[in-house]
Structure formats: structure tokens, C-alpha cells
Image (tube, rainbow, N blue to C red):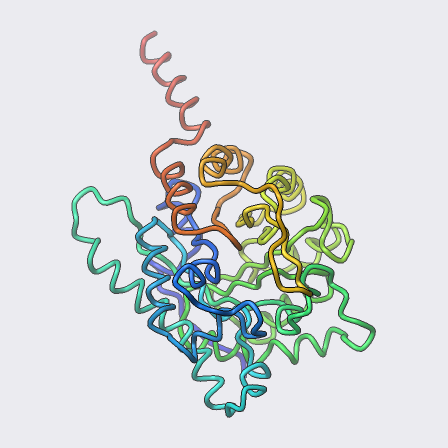
Length: 349
């Protein structure tokens, strides 16, 4: 039996949120990065930030609240590397593992509801009622060997194995009641196809997005062209947005321009800071990166190029999201400015 999840017409539509946000909505930023700023130790753990579903769920909720305060319109759950096999390897039962997956969504929903209740009656506030996206990291994220940045899963990983790996996690997360499903850091066409087929087979009725990384600014990490990858996604009306996450910000404009030619779906981008992560050694390498001022400079360019959702990934913080929110909520789109100018000229005539 497929998953049946009824949409709330007024709050859980991705398109509706984008409209309410003025044409481009704000995602949150680096979750693990902010956890580490609060003292969390996760670098050498294959569960990554999902470890704190076990150790300190209140800290996860605190981070969600910090991103809401910064202006995020969408919260992404802490389930990126939360998998049933991963929890089983820690000695937990299947029931305990599924409870933790559901908790990742509940923590974000509770934070959203508490925050919105405190803001919705304040006149002139610039916040939107945020949506909660349940994160589903790639198979490579579970392996924790850096393969989400290469797509090299080996000859024994086929379409059915990837669907079997993701299926129960998808079912549990949808049952937890998020507004969206976020397939993140997908590295190749095969896993993109697995995600597309799964949401069809499971009759998922909430909006979904699929995001890829890129190591060259041109192709998927596997080396496959985005045209062949997006051809698979474009066939599904259950995938509502596509885009890029955890890629260097200097790749983003070119990839937005490429995606606008390859798909009519909403384009979402949430790059990292530009620092380079060694997935095998599990450490960040010294490299040039974007600071918050640089994000503030480039966000309107990405928006005007066609991005409908913009946020941050690794090494970005609530300060980054505050800069992004400031741009998107305080500065009108270039097209809006031009239209207003034309209308004023006509009125003067």
C-alpha cells in the first residue's frame, strides 16, 4: 500500500510558499555546522548530526529555532544521515530506529509551530509560516565514505538495491508528517531514478525535491550530464523542485542557468561556503570561501537567474541565512523594479 498524506491547501504547498515569500523562499543553513558551534562532536561519527537524535534532541530543536529567527522559510530535518541500518549498527532496534526518524521531523515541526505562534500576531513581521522538509541523504551519505561526492557505488549497487535502501525510511518520514521531502546530495542518475520511482510507487502526496552536488560546476558528481539526469526527473509530476546543494558557491550561477534550460521545475540552490571537505579524512581543507557578505552580494544574482529557493549547506550558519533573508525579503526582484518603472513612465504620460 502506498503512503497517503493529505496536503494542507493553505500551508503545505511549495508553490504557495514561494509566492508568499515574494517569488524566492529562504532555506535554512548548515545544520551540523551550527551543532558544532554549540560544542557537538560529530566529525568521526557515521551518523553525523543524526547522532544528536540520540544524545541531545533539545540541541537539534535549538538549532532549528536559530534558523527560524534568521528568517528561514523552510527547515530541513536532521535525518540526512539517519538511516535504519545506521541506527541498527549502534545496537538499536528497528522500532527505536523508526522512532528516531520520526523524531527528526517532530523536532522541526515543534520548533516551527512554537516560533510561528510567537510571531504570527506581530504586526509587520516579515516571517512566513515555515515548511518542514524531511531530509533523505544519498546512499553515499549512509556509507560515510565520501561517495556522495563521486557517485561510485560499485557494480553491486543497482536500481532495486537503492530503492530497497531508501523505501522504509521514506515511508517512516512521510508518516511523521513533514510538509516536504528533500532528497539531498544525490550523486548520479541511478539514484535520482530510484528516488523518482519511489515517490511514484509509494504514492507520496507531499511536494518533493531532488538536489545534487557537483565537483566541476558542469555535471553530476558521477560525471553524467545534468541533461541526462534531469530527463529522468522531468518525467515525474511528484518531484516539484530540483537543484544543487553542498557545491561551491562559485558554481551556482552557471548551474542555475543550465538548469533553467533543462527543466521547468522550481530551482533550488543551497551551496556550501566554498571550503573543501575531505570525505575520507572527514575534515575541512583550507580553501577560499564565501563569507556572509559575499552571499548577500550573490543571492540577488542567483534569484534573478531563476532560483526559487535559496539557502546554505555545510559551513554556513544562521548569520548566513540572515544575510540571504535580508536580501530576498527587503530588496525587490530586478524584474519588479523594471515593471514598476515602466508603469510610472506610462502614468506620467
